[in-house]
Length: 260
Image (cartoon, rainbow, N blue to C red; front, side, top):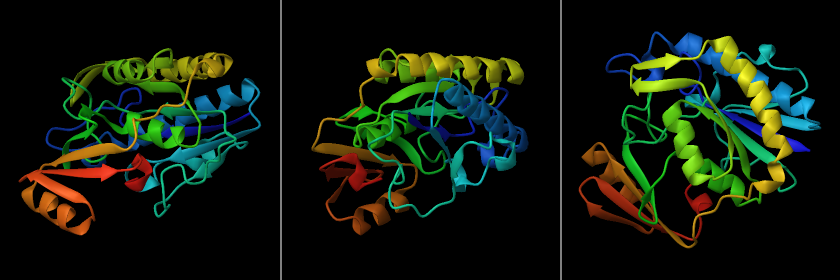
């Protein structure tokens, strides 16, 4: 069995933002990166405990240089840095599942901790075929193009609710109760780590019940930007883009991997 552990930093235990700032500008960043490492390591150990032969950890938060790599279980491999042609480019169709660890809720989620879709400074929302989506759905669809299902998600309660809505039957671990961008009631970090270690083994046991996630193709991808000039430059620089209002650009795509 082969798996990917995709790791973000906002959804871990005791991770919150600072007033007026993203995680990357928050005093909480260093701890959030360390906790993301711990939670990723728990997922890796749980997968190997369940019989995995290979686990690739993908560090995918802001610039993809976040984790303390020497603290990860030495049996794993690590995908890091920017410049890959596609998301999950290095994952083959012979993989058995993807775990999304430390992910967060999408834009426009009420009281979601640091909720956003790829960039809280750039995007107001993203829609596929008229439905709002976030990073979980996008990454699940990218993996789904290779026939690989998402089998596990850890996040705050808003994020795990989003995951369960998009991927019925998925195994989740809730790391904290989100109360707003800057506040949450979190599980103790060590308890969250233990629950992820146990939860991901449950996910492996029922992996055959999870089907690869897919959008209906061809699709319309709509992005609403926070600044006019970003919408303008994007619509002019991408063939087939249609600027439907000053802030919003729509793309007609054969599949989501054309964009990501």
